[in-house]
Length: 340
Ligand SMILES: [Zn+2]
Ligand SMILES: [Zn+2]
Image (tube, rainbow, N blue to C red; front, side, top):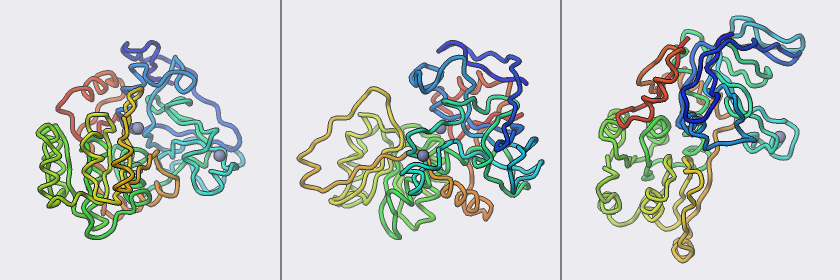
């Protein structure tokens, strides 16, 4: 099969012929129809997610949509030709975290497109457990981005921030994840503030229902204070997670508010003002992908047209390098997707 292989960091991937995976009795083989391109793929490309997580040569791609073409002997409930997406965290399903509904935290986790070969290839092998079917009338290129760009935002806003009707929520970063965060926070009945530097991305957030658009390059603290009449927001969903954004996003919380950290900057820790934490009883939680159950809920929301996956551009599979370059450029909004 053909695959885009990263052989050296910061060097273009090469399209090469690699062996098509053979499946075990509990596996399925997916023919990839579309694969989302995540900012994390850029981190992988630059070598910021080194071994033992990502070892070279590597096939990236963790937002996979496709069709089942082979089924292991012990697999039940899945047919050849089924359309679906992959829950990319392959967990043990037997540890304390897996058994308490936190398989996203399983210590022996292996991830499609990280420790395991990803979807920048014609075929991907996974345990059948990873397969999440969807109504095949829906487009593969939109469904591909659900496993990370949509489901991660869904977990952060519903499960972790527990956003309630009428609350004011600040979304930091209206990129591939944030634009879905806006939609989900609106579905929860929140008033949504979005802070973003890129004008195009901010405008797009407005089109998807954001109530207040804040230019993150122009003293966002003042703008947030004015909008909330000095009270602060109930929750901040940090899709950027840099020192720079955290320096104003955390203090924009009201007393007792919650900060959910989704995005991260490797090797750049943020200094915490413990006195402010004490006086304000702020809560900080990390957010990591979603559970499979949350991904299934997201699929239903998209099938019911309550949520729209935002794909701004598609690239043919063999143009994956161009797609990664486009993602690095300032004017990219929404999610980019490779199609086959
Ligand atoms: Zn990702
Ligand atoms: Zn486990």
